[in-house]
Every structure is written in C-alpha cells, then in structure tokens.
Image 1 (tube, rainbow, N blue to C red):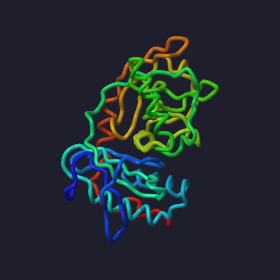
Image 2: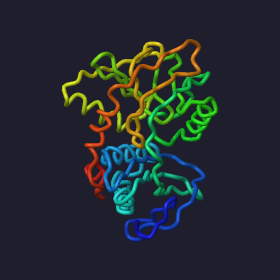
Image 3: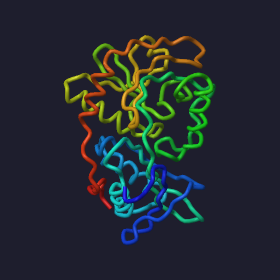
Image 4: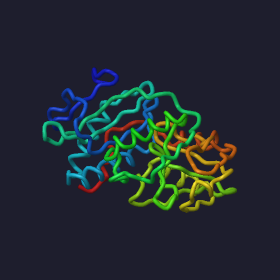
Length: 274
C-alpha cells in the first residue's frame, strides 16, 4: 500500500511524480469502484474501461491519460484483506484531477429490501457512475429511513430501471432475466459477468422491461461489485403488494462469480484505444 493508510485519498499528479495528498472533492464528476479480496478482483478491465469511457465522455480526457492514472492506482492497492477502492475524476480549485480513495470493504450483505420512491427517475446522467451520486445517496438514505436497504428506480411508465446502488436480475423458471442496457441505466460489470456466465453454462437469458408487479413471487437478485448477489427479500413503498420469491440459486451463482476473480495487475484498461 506504499505507506498509505486506510481511508486515505491520494491525488495523482502525473506519471513521473505519482501521487500526493488528496481531499474530499468539492465536485465529483465520475467514479468507479471494485472489490479487492486478498489481492483478487473481478473484471478489473471492465471497471477500468467504464471509467475511461466516462472521463472521455464528460471532459474529453484522452484514454491514455486515464489509463496511466489507473495503472498507478492499481499499483497502490493492498494485496491483503478486503478493500473497496474508489477512483475519482474531480474538480479541485477549478482544475480536473484524478484521485484514489483507499477504503476498507464492509462485510458482504445477505439480503436487499427494496423501497420505491414516490417519484420516477430524477437522475441527470444515469449512465455515468458518480454523476448523480448526491441524488442516489439521498435516495438510499430515504430507503434506510423507511426500513429498507436500497431504493428502486423506476421509469416514468413504472417499469424497472435499477436500484440506487445495484442492478436487478430475476428468474422466470429456468431463464435468467435483466433489463436491456441503455442510456437510462449504468452498465453494470457484475450484471454483465452474470449474464455471460449464465449463457456460457447453457442457461437461457432474456431481456425485458417489467414493472415490479410483474416480478411478484419471482426470485429477484440485486447485484453489484461490492456484495455480488443479494436476494431481494421485500418490496416496499408500492401502491399494491409485491411478494418476494424464494431465493434458491444465490449461493451457487455467487460461487460462479467468485471463480471469475483474478489477481490484481497494474495494466487495467491498457487495451483501450487512446
């Protein structure tokens, strides 16, 4: 960890000078994060590519510069223990900066109780991780205040988009289902890993846009990089009741996800076109 302490923010200066002290950003533009468990991480290249794309889309930052920062950040990651580092593109004193936030990972969660806000999706840039962080943090706090764990984000027509920190998947019989990718949701790395693993295993995969009521009684998963798969065990805040289905496959598929983890390497995103 090169002398950095847990919870430290480091600001990247350049490839020659490396990192200096960082700080809480006044303006967070984009971010990404992943779980490092005893020096292993799932799909680090996919997280890197998502962050590189966000930085290019928001501020036209060349991929080669973002990739250089990511390589330096990954070299700083601890190889022992459980960590949930965050890379950030921030504005500090009017200048664009990259930062690395080294955070210990909380324990793996076991369930998700979903709460539905009284209004549809109000995010500005849902496809960019970090762009709507303040709004999503508020939604999640409202969910906690309501006795739930996660806020459910719905389109204006009442169809599911995603959770405030998760993507949702569900089972219809032996078919694994998800919402199609698009500009109204984040491109989830964990969702993509699961759909690819299911397809490789010969499991039918389907894309659909259901309302919560169309998932009544089904096994539904809330997935993200930190917690992998957690079963949805309750739906709250909806005008009519939705029952959570039994969770029969979570343990099996969490093992499948865990098997995709690979040792941390410092060349994340190097295949991205400048």
